[in-house]
Length: 392
Image (cartoon, rainbow, N blue to C red; front, side, top):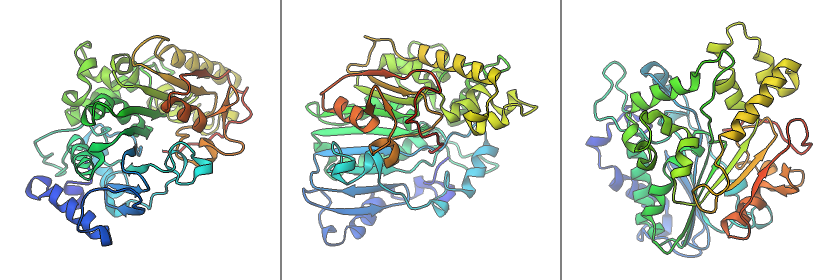
């Protein structure tokens, strides 16, 4: 289910998608319209329905960022997305470039002069869906994997296939997408290129809810089934798991990856507290309603449950020495979701720190091989630098 389907009012298979994209980029490129390759010192922003790109200085360095937006597990849920920015470009809001995508040296010193691409999220499956049959009752097309293929094909054709440095990143469902597509992305670029992946708030754990049930596992099973995602999940994982939906959980995928990865997550991730630990189905009496809104509202017994959730979350992280190579981890004790896209949480005075290091500094040090780190914060409420918020 995605913007490049009936949601936009036209069927991809009957429209020359890539040539249309190229013509549109060509028109938006103004004086660059006659040349479809990227060149040094090109500085302009292209805004399309499905992605925005800010081109600066050097075409050899490219950063791709997946926006987040959750998942849909049945036709009814996916249909709702046709009426909002998660499924239709008619409702998509302007995107900003800040944090890891910021273009100012002092606030993003390691990546400010890269080509930066922000990929809108519109398919409800972390870009893994690929169903040939159209959903009859809603006319929905579940083809997120094809959208990703078209985006990356077009961008690579514009010069990014010659990249010397590349970073695939994302937040929330986009952070999961960065993990799921990590090795495939690496294989698209020159063998000599430095290619790494970065996941922000995308490390969703296979945990039990407060009623003792596997709500999120059942949810992911439905997502994978609806979108026929199994064939687009990493084969390095699905070949080892009897149930393909388990490979929607990073804890089963990450140890099988070949490409260097950085994991950024809050130990008390707001989305996971609301949807993994205490989903509405497990909290019929809404006793967790206020706690889910703000960790400061939690009772002592709820805080005890949250501390156990943190313990289980940390246990699900890759162990030291596991694949992928050069794995770095930054887990703060904030009650937040997505921390790399906003300047005040990425790298600014007062930004969250773990072991006196801010997120932007840790990611830059990792990418440029200055440091491989495993920073895990002390339990809540020990960190006064936390900015508790819920972004995607």
